[in-house]
Length: 236
Image 1 (cartoon, rainbow, N blue to C red):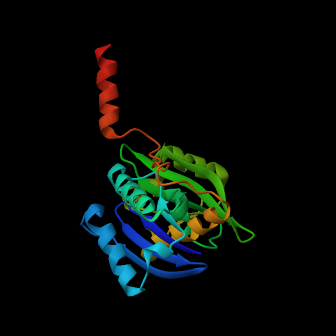
Image 2 (image 1 turned 90 degrees about the vertical axis):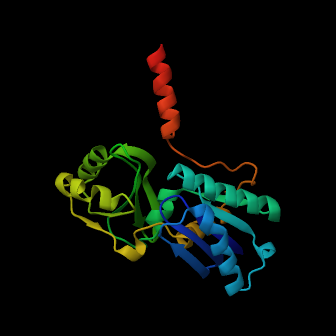
């Protein structure tokens, strides 16, 4: 089983290739270029390094959202284009779930936070239980104060990761009454390797879709859509 994984849901662009339980290659960049300039060249570099024949892939996993609207569209379009060209199925992996999967075996709760602006984060709550990855609370867009209040009521230690940490770290330190920590840099951002590892599990369960079917999961309206709705409401 060989799988290509893509993640451009946030500030990071990441490409990985999995073969069974082995991560053959991973290329991750957290720098200025837009994902439209990076994803395909990164894939080409990896393919050359590991002598990958794209036709040998069984599926393409992609971080399906939530996240940056532009980043998700680029990742989705890239995955759909490859899926159509190669006639391969897609595996849609929830972005926040893949982020949490970086922290294998962590005790207590894992809480990824991605900055969604307007004092909101894209988040979810996860844990490891008897060696199995569990969803405590599925991904959603919530206000940071509401998230902190929810975690306080759960009464368990929690580890945060994601690009929302530098934005909301001080606020969380003010609000939290439970023990907490912040993940170190090498596991604190999106990684296509995690998307690929989870994608393998999804694929084994038959949770695949055609390239034509795939759509990103935004969780909320874009800024342009919100502003349009506000203008229409004001006109009534």
